[in-house]
Length: 111
Length: 308
Image 1 (cartoon, chains in turn yellow, purple):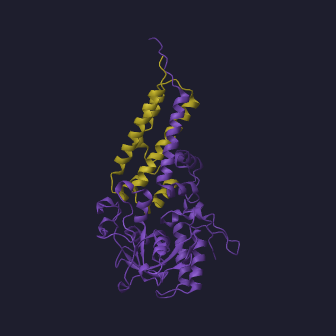
Image 2 (image 1 turned 90 degrees about the vertical axis):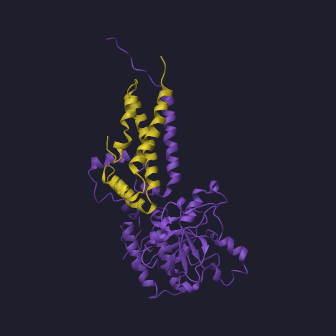
Image 3 (image 1 turned 120 degrees about the vertical axis):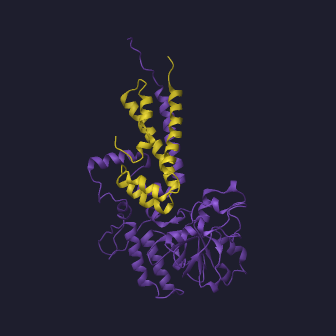
């Protein structure tokens, strides 16, 4: 899986591990992971763009587009936001994951 | 050890709920940051599919040069009279605009001729794809080229305070209200749209319009939050703002006022906090052009870049 610079903060593997506790067709498993991934990216981008002053958006998005894995992006965000951006990303990721865990639990078929 | 089968999931149910979450988070992002999403999409990237994009970059190995975000935006530029195509980043586009404006503008700040105003209007259309005119619906300011000075934040609702504004707090907040009063009657009624209106406001000299008092009800409504395009001809930086205050007085030697955010973007929040700008009305009856720096708007227009 290609890396994104905030992967170490969102740790999507926790959700994958949760899904893998169930008997899932590999294709279906991949579909679910893709949906989770999309949801997380939407939320994390929102957090980043909310805390990053608008006049830095173009620079950030350009660099993000060119090299989504570049850890230097986190340094850029730290320099240009007045919040602890790592903490904000972590907080949002945890909240989204909690919500997704709950959905997985609800979809579990009792034997 | 006995084999314990893994529990199963109601795939359809989970898929439906996760798909719903993906859609709603996407809607939220689009609503919250429309310009940023448009910018990414103009470069061919769906925000939720950034990982797929990253994978493509890795496989193609084409990380440098050819995938510059600026390229898809300005790469759409149409040829001028010749067969040349522009391939400019937003920064280069600004520099080109600044250079072209130097050939049109007088050497000192002064009222422009009709011909100069028309040439600038055409240049804005060609560069940014935005219809911006010195005169709109028969209304015009006394100057479309003048000095802009730094203004403070405006109170947006009763009880608003400086610390509730998110940036440039050192600029302060005015003790009085803007020309149209509070933006919202209460904090609860302050919408994102109204937040943007305060953030990107300008003050214009409606008080010196010859027919201001005679036609006050009409002109007040016409100017209220009127969208304007402001350009710093020294660097080509262009921003869409709205009229939310009146002034400054003539004795100040300035013709317009800019919010802290407007001045910062234009690069005029330094030194004397003042600089020459072009200001024209945006013809946007469908309200499609968002307030803020214009690089976000370029993908919305035809983006005709006249190259030589």
